[in-house]
Image (cartoon, rainbow, N blue to C red):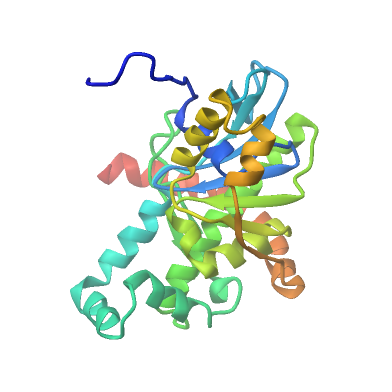
Length: 282
C-alpha cells in the first residue's frame, strides 16, 4: 500500500454509526433522519437492546454505546429524483436557464402550495415488503387543483410523515422523547424539506456544515484515537458545526398533526385494491 510502518490505523464503525457521530448525535433526546435513497431514523443510547419490534440495534462509534435505527423508507429520496426526471429535459433546461437546479425550482414552486398539498397524499411503498408483496405506492386525492408543485410537496410531506411515525414508534419502545431532529443526506439541502420536517415533527430541525457526515464521523474517531481531541464529546463539539435550524410553524404543524392519522391509515384501505390488481397485472 505504500503506507509507512507505524502509521496509526483506527477502527471506526459502520456507515450509519459514523454518520450519526458526524452529525453530533451524542444524546438520546436527538433523532437523526438521514435523507438518502434509503431513509432511516437513528438515535443513540447505552443499552444493547435485542428483539425490539420497531428498531434494531447496532454498535455505535463510541465504545460502550449503541446506535438504534428505526424502520425506514426504501427508495426514499429516489422518489424525488424520479419525479424530477419525469418532468423531462425541457423543465431541467428552463431551470438551468434561470440559474437554478431542477430540484430548487420545484422547491420554490412547492413552497407556495399550502400544507397538505390541497388533499394530495403520497404513500411511499414503491418497494413492497416481503410479507405484502402485492403492496404498491399511492398518490391519492387528485381533483383538478393540483399541478407538479403539489405532487412534489406531497412527496416531501409523505416522507416526513412516514419518518415521524417510525421515529415515534422507536421512541416509544425506547421510553424516550426527541427534543430536536438533525437531518442529513442529500434531501437536507432543500429548505422546504427542512421546514416540512420541522412542522411534521413539531421540533427544531437542524442541518450541520458539510456534506459528508459519515466521513466526518470517521475523522472524529481518528481524532480521539490519536489524541487530537481528548474525548468524543470534545471532538464533536469542535468538528460538528450547526449550519442552521428550522422551527415549527404552529398553523402548519396543526395541519400535519391531523393529516398524519389519515396518511398512516391509507394502506389499510389500499391493500385489498393492490392485492386484486396484482393478481391481474402483477
